[in-house]
Image (cartoon, rainbow, N blue to C red; front, side):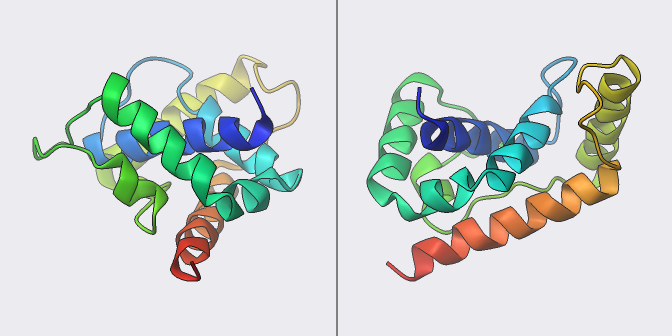
Length: 138
């Protein structure tokens, strides 16, 4: 799988978490870490610019990974990749994610490549803004 597709796969998984406001298990915070590392390597910009890829991932996920938000409304992957991506949770979701991230760091799963959780979330906020703005220019 190409890194740009990995970005959209992880970004849409994060989007689902943010709308559902719940973790699906331990070590889910790895997706936020991975998205930031993909951005560090320049792949988030490339993925954001590739509208065809973004829409292909959205279509695939809509067919095979239909999900509902916390309010029971269907999650619209096409909207997510076209200007409405959410990469930063709030409330209880943010707290649970922070705890999951700290456990991953403490367990050594990030191999010393970690940063404070608050910084990770700040970076994801920036990536979210860029991805959403990338669509606005199309």
